[in-house]
Length: 558
Image (cartoon, rainbow, N blue to C red; front, side):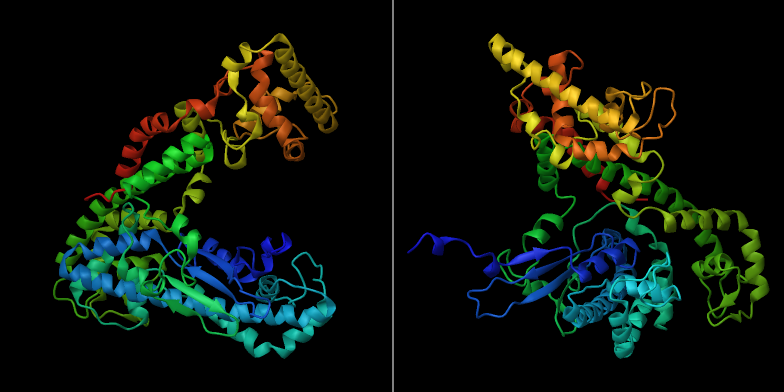
C-alpha cells in the first residue's frame, strides 16, 4: 500500500459547520428571544465511504430553555394540579419548537433555492437580509443605507418567481413571533377551559423558571431535537433515537459538551478545575456570573412570590361568587394594556365590572408592586452574557476573578495561561539558575519587544505623552477603554487602538508575561504556572467555589 493511499481524504470525512444560512438564522431567532436561550444548532455533513456515495447534509437543531425546564419542575412538585399545569407547559413547548423548526425548514429550502439560482452567475446572497429589507417596506435588494445588494437583477427575478414560498416563510416567521410567551396566554389562544385551580397554579408559577437550575426533564426532552434535510419537513428526533455519541442521529460531541446537566456536582467541579488549570479568566468569570445571576433572580423572585401570594389570596377572597371567573393575571394584563380591569377576552366587559373595579382600587398598592416586578422580570436578562452586559456587572466580575484567582480579564480563550506561548516560560526559579548569557538574552528580547510596541503605538498617537504604552496595556489587561488616560478622559485614538492590540497580540502577551525581567511588575508569570496549578491545587481552590456555585443554582423554597 502506498503512502499516499494512507492519507485521510477530507472529502470523505464527516464535518460540522456553524456558519450556514440556516444556523445563522437559528442563532438570530435565539438572540431575538423567539427560541430557548440555551438552544444550539449546527450543520453536519455525513462521512462517505467513497466518492460514489452522495453527499448528505443535515441541519441539527436543539431547542432548550433552562427557565422552562425549571418552571416545569416547579409545577410538577406542586401536587396533582401542578402536574396538570406541567403537562400543558410541555404541550406548549413542543408546539413552539415545532413552529420554529417548520419555519427554519422552509427558510433552509428557500435559501438553498436562492443560492442555486445565483450559481449560474457565481453569486450568493443572504436570504435573511433580503427578508429584512422587505419587512422594512423596501425592495428585497435595497438595503437600509440606500445601497443595493449584489446580483440585484437576478434576485428580483427570483423573488417574483418564488413569491408563494416567500410568503409562506414570512407568515411562518410572523407565527413564531406571535407565539404566546406565557402558558396562560397559550391556554387562552387554544381556548382550553381549565379549572380555577389550574388557572391559579399556572399564574403562581409564571416566573418559577427563575428559581435555579434543575436536571433536564424527560418530558421536555421528548421534543428538543429536530433535523432538517434538503427538501424535507423538519423531523423531530425522539431521545430513544439519539443513541450514543457515535450514532449518526445524535448531536455528537457538540451536544455532549454543551448540553450537560448544569448542576451536576462532578461536572461542575471538573469545569472549575479545568478553568483554573488553564488559567482561563473568562471561564471563571462566567462560572461566578452564573451563580450571581441566579442569586439575584432568586432574591427578586422571593420578594415577588411574597407580594403576589398576598395579593392573590386577597383577590380570590373578594371575587368569590363572581361569574364568569376572572383571574388576577387577567386583571394585571388588562391594566398593562391600558384596558378596564374588568375586561374579558374578546373585549367584553364583565357583568360585575363595578365590583372588580372596586377590588382593583382597594388593592392598588399591591397591584402596582406586582406589575412593577413583572415588568422587571419580562425585561431581565435571560443569559449570563446578557446579565454581564448590564451596568457594571462585567467590571465587577473581572475584579472578583482577579482578586480571588489573580487572573486578569484578558487571560481568556487563546490568551489563557496554558495556551499562550509566552506563558510556557519556566518562571523565575528557572531564570535565576541559568547563566548570565541566558539571562541577558531574555532581557534583551524583552527590551526589543517593548521598543517595537512603543513604535507601533507612536503610529496611532503621534507620541502623545498622555497615553504611553503601559497605560494602554493596563487598560487592555483590565477590559477598560484602550484610550483611557490618567485624567479620566478618553484619547481620540482610543477606537483605532483595537487594531494595535489585534495586530501585535503575540508581542503584547510576551511583553506582559516577561515584563518582570525588566523589574516592571510582579505576577504569577514569575512562576511556572502550569506546574504550580496542578490537579490537586486546582481541586483545593475549586472546592469552595463549587460549593457556592451549586448552592446558587439550586432551587429555593419560597
